[in-house]
Image (cartoon, rainbow, N blue to C red; front, side, top):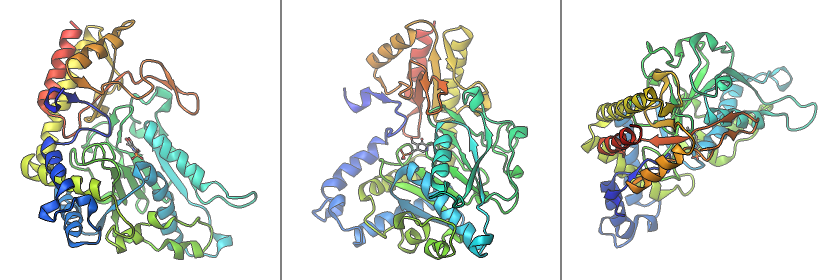
Length: 420
Ligand code: PLP
């Protein structure tokens, strides 16, 4: 099939605007009449410098990033940030507590667990903080501040379920859980909104926005210490990860580790090194940054900026959820996330009810050009995570920025037809 005969609902890497890919294809061969492709140009040359600086400026204007935050382009994916966040924030905390090593108490690191990705981030914090040898203190004390695991990640914690430590170095949450399809609602008055007001003053807040970045405004932006996102859902190809770091957290981790009691930070993961070198400390992923720059320009110029994106994304999500709610009333489908206000705008997870029906649904979908609708690899059978916990993701329609309302409506028509 051709590109326009297919509706791609992939969870990531995900579809990108055709217009941007066409432009990128030209730039891949001959970037702005240099006779050389963008991937063949030095990352320190004037051409690429203009690309990365343009991407930064456009992102700053699109998301209205305040001046006291630095935007960085890094490698290592969202998973790399599971580690980098721990290491950089332990270093910042250590510098803020320059007591002799024997008096230093490893800080608490509070994690909010709402699905697979926040759980992975927590597991990495536990791994990195563990004492490196017997009788040595831990580097930090990762702790669960709230978890909805016991209800199979099908809802978000209620306000009274949060139990934050007053003296934590930071609180960590994942804004949108890509696998489970659960997302914090955007307004403070929404029942399950992230409870910023319950986090003590002085405790930093870190958010993984990998699968909801630039889909709508970020609530309480300036309460965050770090916001990060892999590009491969809403922004560009995989390979680049965007970090937005409050400037006072760009700390010299080597100085911090000289004080003792914290691990060294791999040089390419130190935020300050990245910032001092304008994300060019070492060779960056030039092609993903180039495509991301094109996408940002496109979103600003043709998609109404963040307001336009929010409006379209809300409409897409509402249309699909309404269709699935109707199918659910008929007993033909079941939405995975039970609380409607906690349902992700980006990843819509559901099951088709009845023996063999899900398989039939997917086969029919494939014939109509709907692609990559299968849920996480857990799909179809119950899936056990590392601790033996079971859940099923069934079908997942990811409706990121580049998925059009027309594609969503066609999918709804098919769901209506199948579930009648
Ligand atoms: N966080 C979230 C919310 C994700 O969806 C993903 C990947 O899909 C990750 C983190 C991990 O990202 P990466 O695969 O880039 O390491």
